[in-house]
Image 1 (tube, rainbow, N blue to C red):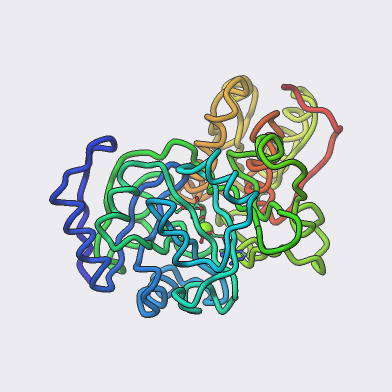
Image 2 (spheres, rainbow, N blue to C red):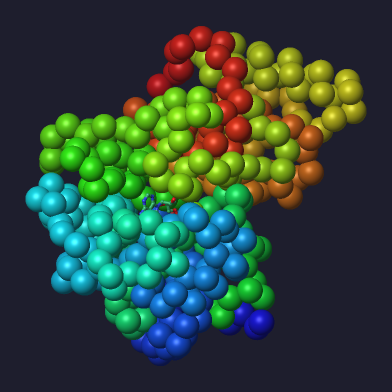
Length: 355
Ligand code: TXA
Ligand code: MG
């Protein structure tokens, strides 16, 4: 398949290009597009065959449900059975934005889109290109992250091209995304709301709006038997090709430990990679050292995480060591992704980190 790549202005996407993308969606094709979180791979969420094509292009297991993206609140009514009061408040506070909510689905939503579930995930993104595409594409755009299943989510169009060129109809290049981690997911199908995936909108921000929310047990416990409720959270994910180890501790001991490991690797003829920060990059002696940004800017760390994991795949390293980034506001979301990428392999030198 020939994949058309069009570049658009983020704030004022070209009308003709967006109309063409909308036509592709309405006729059952697939279009990758930027959102404020990560790039999405869009298809018509109410068309079962479009959803099947999405699974195929990503190589994604078909029991892992898709998020339906909408452009206005009226659209929500058609695809869900009821909207709990707390969910309405959340929509008022955070939509359009990096929040996904789970509802009981209406009969308008095919099981192909929900991976066979009776519930449906819905998000109203704030990115102008995403908004324009939803409006042109019929109002209900099913979109997972636009990566091959298991790889880090794409934060630039070049990442999408790496994974999906030749497999989908169109890629809309709207530049780098703003947040860099996928949306926060909150489940409203149970008596009490539950966070199924941490993101930019954190627990504290949510609790200010609707009171107490729980974190899904499957997120907090690494026990294999406790399954996260969002099917996608159970899969090994984001993993770079080389094994990744996270090291948590104070700066000095972390640098010393990682340098020791890298020395061992070098002795054995192996190439080591390190995920450092602007503050520490000069202190490492490893074959490849990459800085994720400064510790002063946790939003920058979030924004660079997936890109840096991809960059290491191009470096042909045998093992990667990463500092830990349990930052004050987005730490839970950042560490959730980093831990998954590392297969939960973390070395604790001490509880403390320097922030
Ligand atoms: O920021 C985002 O949410 C991006 C952009 C493109 O909007 N999308 C995204 O989609 O991250 P995806 O498919 O990569 O992740 C969706 C997650 C998966 O873990 C999936 O299992 C979960 O949402 N999910 C979807 N529908 C669900 C449902 N009905 N119940 C529980 N979990 C659900
Ligand atoms: Mg994904």
